[in-house]
Length: 447
Image 1 (cartoon, rainbow, N blue to C red):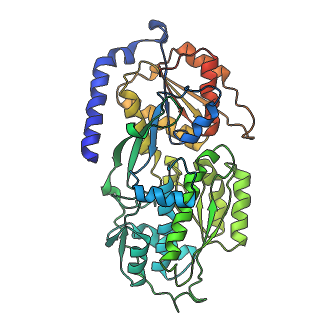
Image 2 (cartoon, helix red, strand yellow):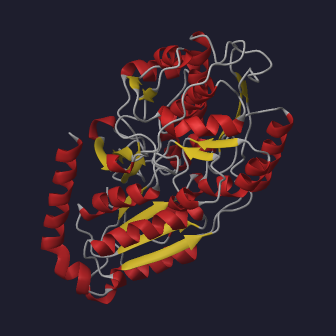
Image 3 (cartoon, rainbow, N blue to C red):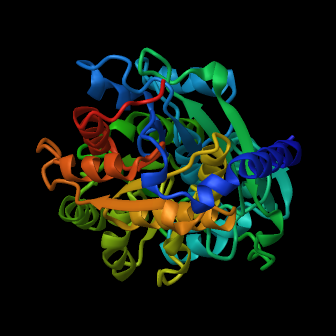
C-alpha cells in the first residue's frame, strides 16, 4: 500500500509540473493577476484545536490542508485513549507518545537496570531484529524471559530505529479542514516515507536479568518524567500527548511493571519555553527521574538537552521533528519516535505540488522546527522544478507571552504583493495570527 500511494503521488506531481511548469518556473508576480490563495499547514497546526482560534471567523480554515506524522490508528486504540481523556478531540502524536514510554520500559527491563546509561544501550535494539511483538504485555513477557525483541507498536510499523535513535520509516497523513474549521476524517490520506535499509544494524546487547527482580541493585522503580507542552504556544497539541503517555504507563503497570515494580510517572510542563523547560528538568533530576519524555517543540529539546545530558538522563521525544537533531551531540542519550522533517518536507512538497501553484509563500516561526521544515520544503519544491524566484520565505518571532498578539501585517502585505496562490504556514497555535493577518490584508482564501 505504501509503495503504490508513493508512486501515485510521484505521478501526480510530475503531471502537475508538466501542465504548470512553464508558468511556475518563469513567470514573475507582475505577470499574473492576484487570485485566491490556498492555505497549507504542518503538524504544529493541522489539529482540531487550531480551529478554535477562528470562532469569530467561522469557515476561514475551510480548504486548508497539510501533513502530519500519523499512522492509521485502530478504533480500539482511540477508544482506550478516550478512557484516559473522554474529551479528546485529536490523536496527533498520541501513538508516538505511547511508543516512547513503552520502548523506554522495555529497554529498562532488558538492561536489568534503571540506570539511564544502561537503558540507552538497549533502546535502538528494542526496535530491531528479534521476536516480533506489538503490545506492552507481550513484549514485557519476552523481555523478562531474556528474549531479543522487535517492538512494533502503535506508530512504529515498518523499519526500526536508525543509529541516531529515531524511526527509519514513517507514515504521514494528509489532512483537510472542512467548513466547520475541523479536520474531515473522510478526506485523510496516508502515505509511507523513509527507507527501512537505514535501520541500525548494530547488534543489541544481550538481555540481563535484574538482580533480585527489582531490588536495590536494579534501581527499580523506573521513574519517567513528563516534559510536555501543558502551556505555551504548543499547548493545543498536549491532550493527545498526555493521553498517549498515560495509557502507556497504565498498560505497562497492568502487565506487571518493570523490574518487578510499577513504573512511576512524574508529570511536568515544558511551557513551550526554554526557561520553564529547564526548571522542569531540574525538578526531574532532583526527583530521581531516569527517562524524560519530551520536549514538545524541537527548539525546547535543543535548549534543555545539555542539562539532561549533564545529569546523565535520557531525553525521549514523541514529537520533535527538527532534522538537525539527528546529528546533535547527545552522548547517546537523545531519542525520538517522531520522524525527521527531511521526510515531512517531501510529503508537504508533494501535497502543495498536486495543486499546481504558480507562486508559493512559506511562512515559519523563527526556531529550529519552523526554519528547518521551511528549508526542507523549499529544497523539495526546487528539486521538483519550481523556480527559486517563485518561492517566498518569511519568518516571524513567536511572542514570549503566548497571550500577546502576533503582528504579521507586514508579512501579509508582502505575500499579497507577491501574488502568492499558495501559502504554507509552519507554526504552533500562534500561527493563527498569520492567517488572520492575511484576511485583514484582503487576501482572498480559496475554500
